[in-house]
Image (cartoon, rainbow, N blue to C red; front, side):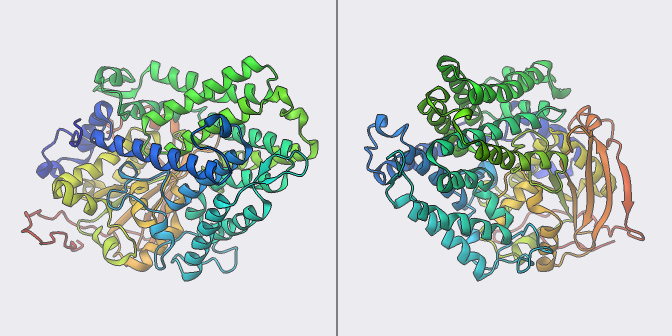
Amino acid sequence: MGLTTGEFPPVEPAKFMDMPYQERIKVLSRHWAEYGFGAPKITAIVYIVKLLVLYMGGGILVGALTSGLDPFSPSEWWDAPIFYQKVVLWTAFLEAMGLAGSWGPLAGHFKPMTGGVLYYARTGTIRNPPFPTKVPGTEGGTRTALDAGLFIALMAAYVVALAVPGTADGETGIDLLPVAAIIPILVLQPLLGLRDKIAFLQARSEQYLPALVFFAFFPFVDMIVAAKILIVTVWCGAAFSKFGHHFGNVIPPMVSNTPWLSSRKVKKMHYRNFPEDLRPSKAAVRIAHGPGTLVEFGTPLVLLFSGNETLSVAAAILMICFHVFITSTFPLAVPLEWNIGFIFITAFLFIGWPNHEGFGLGDMDTTLMILTFAACLFFPIVGNMRPDKVSFLPSMRQYAGNWASAMWAFAPGAEKKLDDHLVKPALMQRQQLVPLYGDDEAEVIMQQLIGWRAMHSQGRGMNSVMIKTLGADMDHYIPREAEFSCNAITGFNFGDGHFHDEHFLRTVQEKCNFAPGEFMVVWVESERVGEDKQYYFVMDVAVGVVERGYWKVTEAVAEQPWLPNGPIDTTVTWKLDGYERVRYPAQPRPVPAAGDDADTPALPV
């Protein structure tokens, strides 16, 4: 990969769609194993500059200058509570605006690179309420002036809270955020969330809202200890979710996408026998469940309970290194700001205000400690037992490989309806890429995400169901990774299939009016803890859900990404009586003249 040139898969773009679908997956998954996404090196440079200048540089300037601190004297602010509070606000603000996680080309935002504010501050775009049938006034799927106004008001509240100076705490005399600056955020963000769970979770509300509650209502010592409980819950929740079959499949493609790792030999070592066997090697599994799962689970518990200064500092440094490594791999959701924020918060909480100096569990009010533990553990417990009820973000199952996911498949020409009928500031990703790379090359890039998903357990399951659903039509229907496509339609996705669920798909259908058989979806829920099953549905978007069933996770992880032995076994538990899919034939693909649009709808057969 060069500075400005990417590493394309070894296919002839003009003939790519003539290849059988499973052969495409074989080529794309093998290419990913060696090169990752294949993005040019300047992509990583753009992210690094944004991280250093906007997040870190901007955060230091805002946090220090509004708190009476010298931004060029780290000794003044690194352990100052008011600066820590401003870091939390700054991170949440950038996340909510769409300028942090799930930003840029690695998240499917090519032009423009930002989602978030461009979608949430305008009417007519798609929103996805969490309880449309249960909370009055939240039904529907179109953003109104009320929604845009709530978002703008929330962003204004963040700006005000960031700008106001601290006030001396009555008991300790330490400068802290005034409660009056925090309350508007605590009111507006949940109200916005009831109207649109996507905007709510983009701000990483599951992690930052509890911290703001602590800032507003807890005495100083209890605030610090509660923040420690919160961050340890995030770490341990993520670690717990990695005990299982999914996570071994996460490490190899993540390492393959690491921009600083140029050694293809090292990348191949993470696979059992490249190129024939792309299941994770024993070394990759050991890394996943050794330095990965066990460190992420055990080290935070040491930080929470240890009263030994040396042990606490060593554990804090280990967790800092953990986040440095995650940042360096540039995972596709690109949660870079979140990781750098956690690096600072780790140092602040456990080195700046350590347990042995009066900021341990024993120093917290017992009632508040019980309430804090209960609140922090509630969603991870419920979300692991009933993932259909709780998004994987409040469940603290970040990047464990156990995702609710979806795969879309369009009849030839049908995808164009998304651009023709949906209000959104960005074209679908393929059309964003055409001016940069050309028509055929753009299709190869888009399907590379399907190859990436197939390297994970749920990708093999979704491919199996889609192949069974479409049969021979699989070779000429246009497959799409739903997480990527959702980013262009809603402005944000962080790997959570709940963002593009049945409600979302019905909203899309209301606006686009797909014909039966034009837009097919396989959607799968996360595995419940210890169940070894993932439950899916098939949806003909013009008709509704037409099939439900499940597959076994152990069978999915045992197969290759391209399913050389055919689709894995699935158990169908329900079918829509009388449903028969309308088929669409393959279309000849003439070379379009300059300015012409070759995407014309097919006729059903």
